[in-house]
Structure formats: structure tokens, C-alpha cells
Length: 517
Image 1 (cartoon, rainbow, N blue to C red):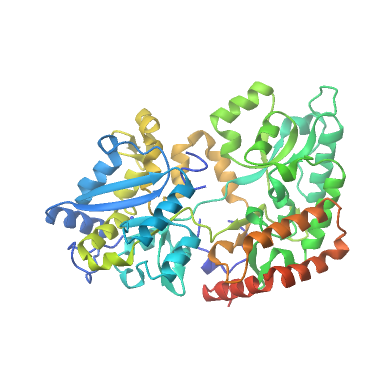
Image 2 (cartoon, rainbow, N blue to C red):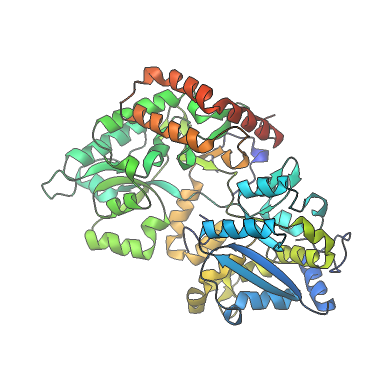
């Protein structure tokens, strides 16, 4: 069981499905707006069977790989089950999608269902363009049950639900270490920040690759993320490269103000000063840190399991050194406990909103509810995860066994996972050879981070503040600014960056959601 810093009753949770690796209540009448079914999947099927002409649904989101409608087996199966004519449009570029959504919302050419991020959710709800789903929760019972209460909160603003957030994902990242290097240098697996320091220093100074050159270093990663497991050992969460919000002793804490942050920075400063850290760490972008690890330039890397264990990366690693043995490192123990990092339980893999205008078309609105419920149910959820039973997969008892056709045709199925999927079950089927690695990462203890629930208040420029924070934190880590000036840094952040306004808004929001009593 994960170690949590939040009240257990409030922690019911588990890169979107097509990013890193690539149901529900309904009424028995498609025009009814009051009835609540006992069995939503059956109700959706009854609706489809009793209706005449198929109802057209216009849906837009980001993604790629969607086949033409005549080749889209998922669309065809959904249309057949729900008596719909789904027109799904996907945009590969997030910027293109954002522009398209803005244009359509401004011109009242509303899609029937569309993806939104947190900023768009706030913008469109403030403009009165989104349907408040709160009165319709009885019609979305199966969807609600499928995604869970924690995910439901992600689509809420001012006590109203304006979007359906996908079901929770699971953590992917851990430290990975070259076990063959540990063995060569007669070193043990590090379990504390101090032991990690000693190993990283040895990897830098003792020629672990045996080529007679001083061309290796201990630790690489992507900016501050490289230090997350070290800071986690001090009970400090810094997820996603920005200071995290979390709860300790029934109080909201911001990582920058965590009493252990100075000690965590001092530990990191010592590691950097030893020369054991990738000198380009703060400049690493994309997967540069992964490539450095694969090429044998570093012995420890903070990375997600797909980018180490998927077949193409295993092949790359073996091509450089057939004896290279990357293994996951358990969360380090330290003065603040044992946490591999912070994990943002407020972040969503995707949210979908319905335009307020659709309340004037109850038949179509019910069809949207039917769709969300269906892909959250016992028939629709397996369809949008794995494809057609007997074609893309078979069942051995309850075990899903993919066919070769799933691999060939299933690359886009995730586009129809509007309410998400049972993450570990899905990943275990899709990436069976990597199952032990994903399970290891997901079961590591994490600090529950709440940033994803919080909206930036008016008058606060997050981009400027984060830029300043990154610059100054980097100075502390690299010894260019003494830790004795840390309190002064916080005062400047509050006075010049309006950071206190953000903290006040965050505390109010977190209390509203019940994470602080």
C-alpha cells in the first residue's frame, strides 16, 4: 500500500494513453431528462434499439492515428450499439486544437463533446458556455462510478461539475541504476540520499565502464526532476518541475515553504558539487537524459518505465553494451520518510466538456450521456481498450489475451477512451513484458500532490513566477547563491511575483475539496 500524507478516505485514486505509450447511468428514453436507470448499459442498448434515425455526435480532441470512418472499427461498433453517427475529429497539434476550440466556441459552432484543459475549463465556464453537469449526475451514474470521486473533483469549479475527467492513471517514474556498474565496483544498491551520493560519486570517478577514460557521471535527468527522489526522502514534493502543493498534519504545504526544503537543497548541493551530476542537467530537454543513460554516459537516471523497458529502447541499450543491466531503485529513506517523489493526483489524463447549448436538444444530450456511460461499462470499456472480442482479443477466463490484430489495428483505440480505463489492467495487457516494471513504479510510495486541482488567481503570472523560481533554485543547487539567502528568496517571490495570492487561492481551493479539514 502506498504511504500517503492525506486523509485516506479522500485519496480514492489510482502521459495520456496516446502520449507516453502510444462505463453508467442512462435513461431508457433518449429524450427523457428525469429517469434514472438501474442498469445503464442495458438502458443504453434499449435507447438505441427503440430509437429511429441515428443521432449525429460531433466530437473533437487532440490525438493522432485515427483511421477513415470506413476503417474505424471502434466508431462502427459504438454507432451500432448506441444508434449514433459519431464524427470524431482529432488534431495532432495542441496549439491547432486550442485554436479550433476557441474559434468554434466564439462562433457558437459548438461540438457535442470536446476535450478541455484546466485553463479552458475555467475560461468557457466563466463565459457560460459549458453545461453544468451537476443536475445530470443521476444520468451519469456509471460514468461517475467508473472514474471515481477524486477524478470527478478534477472537472469541478465553484462547486459545479463542468467536465468529466478520465479515470486516474498511475505513477511511472523511478530512479534507474546500472546494476552491472554496482557489481563491478562492489557497491550496494543505494537506500538513502547519502548512499546515493556515494554511488554517484563512484560512478563518476572509478571508471565503471572500464574503458580507461573519465567519461561517465553518476546522475542524469531532466532538470529538477532528477532530484525528486532525493527530495522525497526529505518529505518534499516537487512534481512536474514546479513547487508542489500537498498536505501535512492537516495543513496545506507548498514545497518551497516545507521546513525540510533547505536540508534537501543542501544535500543536492553537495551532490552537484562533487561533480557526480550531469553538467548539462538543467539544459536537458525531451529525452536527452534517456539517451545519455542508454549511451552509457550515466549510471543513474530518473525516468519512466516505458522509456527504459520498451523493446526499441532495450535494443538500443544492448547495442551499446550487451551487459548493461538497468534496474529500478526503491524509494530512498531519509529524514522526511520514504517517498520516490510527489505525484499529482489532481492532474487529469484528459477532460471532456459538453456545451450548455446542448440542453436545448435533450435527445442529443442523452446520446452524449449514453456514450460516456457505454465506454465506462462492461461492454463499451473493453471495446475502447482492446477492440472487438474474438477479433482483437480473446478471453481466457477473465484474462484478456491480445491477438496479432490488436497490435496492428489498436494504435488509435485510446482516442475513444473518453472516461479513461482501469490503468494497471490495461497496461498489463498492452505491455505484458513490462508488467513487473510498471507494477514496481506504481507501488512505490508517493506524496500526494494537489496542484492539478488549483486554478491560478487573477493577478498572478505563473510563467514569470516559475521562471524566477527555477532560476533561483538552480543557483542554490549549484552553489551560486548561499542557502542563507533562501528566506530572502521567498520574500522576493511574495513581493514581486504575487506568490502569496496564489498560495491563498490554493489553500482555499484545497479546503473546498475537503483535503484540509
